[in-house]
Length: 307
Ligand code: AFP
Image 1: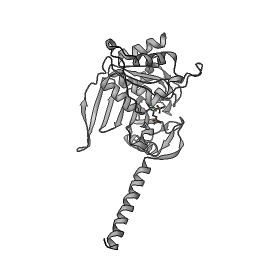
Image 2 (image 1 turned 45 degrees about the vertical axis):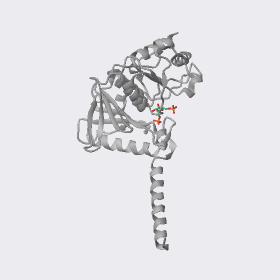
Image 3 (image 1 turned 30 degrees about the vertical axis):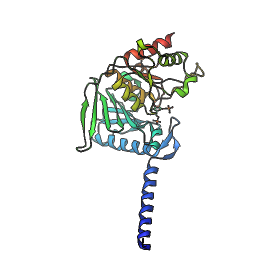
Image 4 (image 1 turned 90 degrees about the horizontal axis):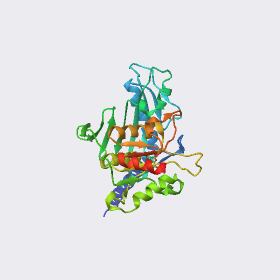
């Protein structure tokens, strides 16, 4: 090899290393924590900015409650009906970003009720949502949503840029054989929650046990699987101090929209003792327990909480 050829080869190698580093850093940690104490990734910030700009452009939105902003972002200026308040987790499952795992975007729409400022219209029970859904960025990009008349799934066709209706009227199986939960937190759970998971792990042919465990770290991916295959996804509260249960997932832009999607597909969603959609949000970043999935599996976990 000549010296020139060797130098050219080294330069190409260096350029591709730079490019690779830039791509890797795009997924990396941006520094700081968000309101709910989670590490903020660059894509979280980017997702929030894209969502804000896009909603502003529509003229449909009066305010946005985003995981990445402490207070609602008012957007009543400009033309348009501004009749909706949107709550959104722009990048749900962001701890998956560094390992190229599945993430999603969750959204919830409520009427703005003519309120000015409109942000407070996002508070109240989840039954006030007029539509909800999520986008999942997996091997394919899926959009699943409900406007109160069933839950429907679309898949992005990259060739045309269109979302095609691939899963009309999704129905959650009555009972499943998969559960999803962060079992590392086992010792902090409500006794009924612990007994339920012990139950699912105990072999019994007649009732289809043991269940299999699947957990991705992104609620969007775990709920999506649960909608299609049945079973139950759970993020129960930390009950170390029973007087002060500490939940992790956010009511307005995680639990309420996913509960509406699940219920519209024939599933159920509970905190263990209460229907999630009946819980009145009093704070924008309120947290709540959620156990969501097949109606029979959710009924059974509620029974364990009552025992
Ligand atoms: P982020 O949206 O901050 O990445 O959190 C993801 C999430 O809210 C939800 O999508 C997951 O189910 C859950 O948290 C995972 O939490 P653990 O890492 O505690 O299991």
